[in-house]
Amino acid sequence: MFNLETFDIKLETNFIGRNFIYAEEVDSTNSILLSKENKKYNIDGTVVLAEKQNKGRGRKTRVWYSARGYNLTFSILLSSKEYFKSKVNLLNFVAAIAVAHSVENLYQLRCELKWPNDVLINKKKIAGILLESVSSGNKLEKVVIGIGLNVNQITFHGNYNVEPTSLKIELENQRINRETLLAEILNNFEETLYRFVYNKKYILNEWKEHCSMIGERISITDGDKEIFGIFDDIDDDGFLLLKTRSGIEKIRFGDVTLSLCF
Ligand code: BTN
Image 1 (cartoon, rainbow, N blue to C red):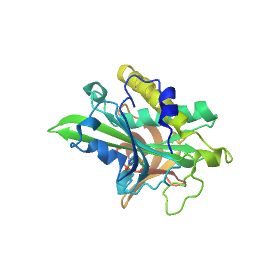
Image 2 (cartoon, protein in one colour; image 1 turned 180 degrees about the vertical axis):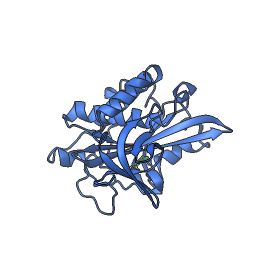
Image 3 (cartoon, helix red, strand yellow; image 1 turned 120 degrees about the horizontal axis):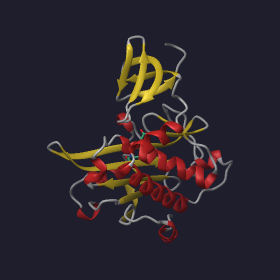
């Protein structure tokens, strides 16, 4: 059970999570916020947290599995246009930085960020982020940022493209208070979002500071396509710049792994 009172005491935000919806079971927290139907979910900063998702999804139509009641699976709605001035893609970075800073502050565990939107500890995946949006014409109406964070789950079954871990595993069986952690993430998310509006460079620098793959030989796969090169940099829109034999290529999608080939 999630203790709303404990969470509320720790939440220090102005608007993120002030409209908070707690659900026992849903298809996907992202789907709830993307749907047009329910007006009470349409407030900027609304957060939906679910104990269980029946159709939790990840990038590239992958399934996101999370054991009931153990982890944090939640989504944040942003609808104010001031967040959409830069490439919204960068909001992935805002979320990843907020998760990394929260975990580092609360548990002194160093997090690494993996392009485009994974958070790792000791090379294993602790959290994934899925950003989805709704547009009308070519105007962006809202962005939903879904975060799945492995907290107290200690066994994982199935096929994963990056090996999963959880905070409890990394902290040698210490049970984590989910209420404190979620409040800390939302506090950090709001603070990082404000910085993003005024200083996009901060986000890019902070993200790069947490990414150990820059300068390494990597391969990027997208469906059947695989491309090799050196991870040169991230551009101002958050796209990956890959140094290949034929020059620098801008990569918008794909899964990155370290590689010996070039
Ligand atoms: C990924 O690693 O591919 C992204 C995973 C994102 C999972 C979260 S859990 C909360 C939100 N609801 C979903 O259906 N997906 C995201």
